[in-house]
Image (cartoon, rainbow over all chains, first blue to last red; front, side):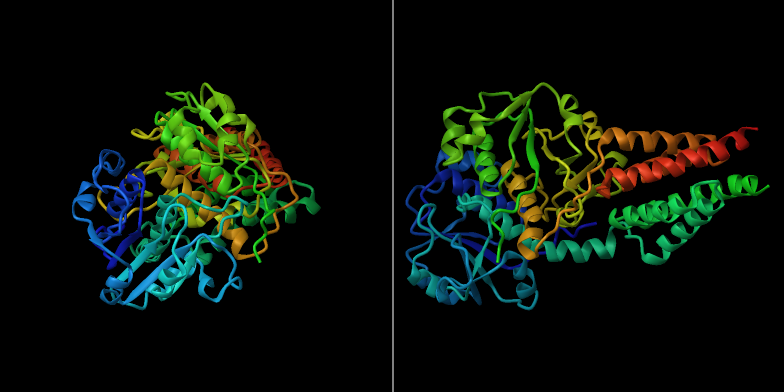
Length: 247
Length: 247
């Protein structure tokens, strides 16, 4: 199924975090998503306090082995790419803040083997313009509501999920249960159509019925196995019923 | 660009939550992502306690207006679709737990205007099999690490983000047509089951066929009209075939 050993080479970098619970929650995410390490720039609190440890669950490793630095600038050169995150939306608002979207990330990351740092700003004020200038580009999670500021650990969750998705989707295609293809579905649709055609049913309703059936099946993200199990039963319906009807 | 006024009609439903901080964090997400309301099934704690209110930030509205119910079953009929979530991965693992992936959700949701409930289980034990049976289908967030269990609010964040992405990425036109509800689908499923039961077909394959059919239909976010057009044809199949088979 999904390859647990796949590993992207990236760190989570938190600038001046001040809430232990957030740091702990992010440590847990680091473990969920195989992050390399947690890096803290000028933390405003003991990052391994009770609140952090409690929220980290089984991920104390990331707290105990967190790297601490004085400024973002001081670690700039250890990364191939520093990706900043911002709650400020709008591509045109400010040149510095023209962000990419999370769903663009995995395509970008797919082309690099370099070490990547994902930078998240202060809980209350985000990243300063100077810190943003140290980032290679910005990512913004678009949020529909007026109250746009997500909790920092939620932003980390969405970005990590989006990065990993590329790997999941590829591996899912390779190894998980096979999705059905259009040829398999055609067999099902043809069989269903033959049954419907043979039935005593209002003729003008038949195309509607057929359309409903095909549309719903096409929308259902069916697997090969599911389609074949329906083909089996519909062929049986056809054999046992259509002939009888036509008699 | 992004349509801030777009509104999908869905509730977040938490089954037996027991940590106020999680409920508060989820209330904040409800506001970030314009969720209709927060529904709590048999909460194990005062959902509006200090911890919850502190974590909810500016989103006390969702805590103060949370609906409380005794069981998932008791609210089943108020939703067009109940979508369960599970940390258990794998489409083959268990018939009940064959999940969809979050990235499949937004395409499915694009075709319904029905009321949707997103159901998240207990922090420690998730959803019971009985509760899963009340859901129309399951979504699983694939996580690369061995320690797969995300914090519940992180799971909510990812699912909400993924649903909204559709609206962010393109102008979505929700269908004007009425979503089907579980009672209408039950009629279709019962009719289909009666047909299958009456057929000369390997007995051990019949439950698999039935499961494939119901799963695919539930995943397809069908409209009332689509379901009724299938009910019509399947009743005709039943009348014209089953009797003949049994003769």
